[in-house]
Picture 1 (cartoon, rainbow, N blue to C red):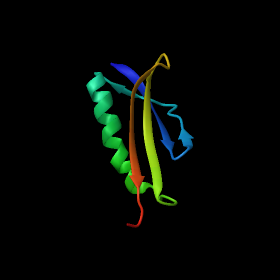
Picture 2: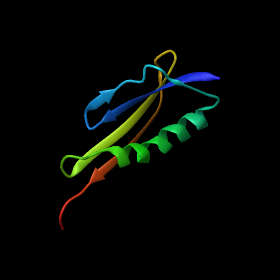
Picture 3: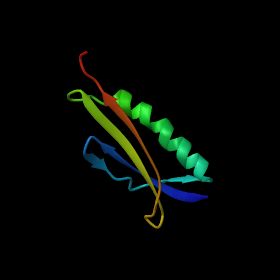
Picture 4: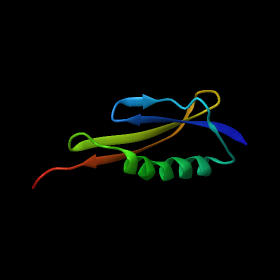
Length: 77
């Protein structure tokens, strides 16, 4: 198994992953990143009508392997 680090960016607030998670495949990395986004969005308190949460995954050598983001755009019509 390889260790992957899931760095979070919550509308400009960067939170690097110091611990990492061991996963067997890149498909598991993708699934973990995508699954985490809605959970983080539920905990977020967006200020204003635009909010972006993203996860950048890197391997042990600090090489990027995956990126996913979730965007809230709200406004009156």
